[in-house]
Image (cartoon, rainbow, N blue to C red; front, side, top):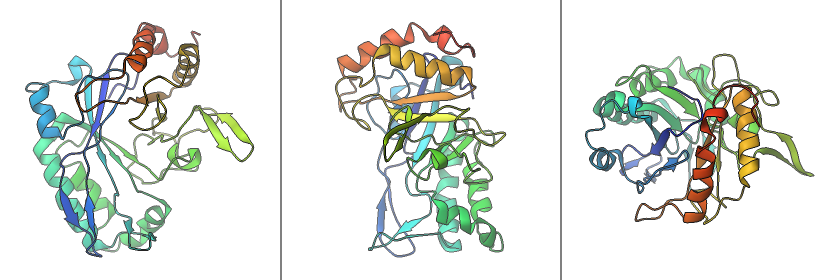
Length: 283
């Protein structure tokens, strides 16, 4: 997948709006979610509807369009007391069957998977689970069954040490960082910390450094960009020059429209896309 910054579209969406049962019999709703990098005019939709909206959707990469699925709660099961637990083999068997069906159904239409809820409890359980017939490895194999070249990210929350994998991969199969954060700076008790860049928070070898943050006031919310154009240019240019990639979460209304204020800023940013993806400091 081409991680260079430009007028390429990355759509994060849920594979299916379904309900399934966890080992504790509490329902988890997989909600439809969409995050767009830079510019999109599609409303949040599951993949089946996106296929219709975008035509046959064949050879999407040549058109500069990439689909990555967003999957909430990978396997840590939140019980009624909101205590997170590592998944057991039964859950991983069932979750593998669900993800495997999606993967085979969509094949190479899906360029990557971004799994939420992969916290330290799940990372710490990896080795012990390898002794079981159904484990994280078998689940990931099912995820990749439809497209073995798909990219994989695992998210443990909006802390740069975790989301940027500064202390190592959350999962051995990880190929890019989830990158969830709320600003271009590290948040500390005293306020802003260091800039979030590949040099300040390096990713492990073989893992693409990727930052994900909302361009407006919150995830899928806001009417204006909270960043000045010059700030966006400077931060993205710096990250690109250090080998990283940036995804901006864009608010989209139910009728598929991006707020004019946000779109105006993104349009101006797009005019600088050549310099923002050349791998050198341009601004």
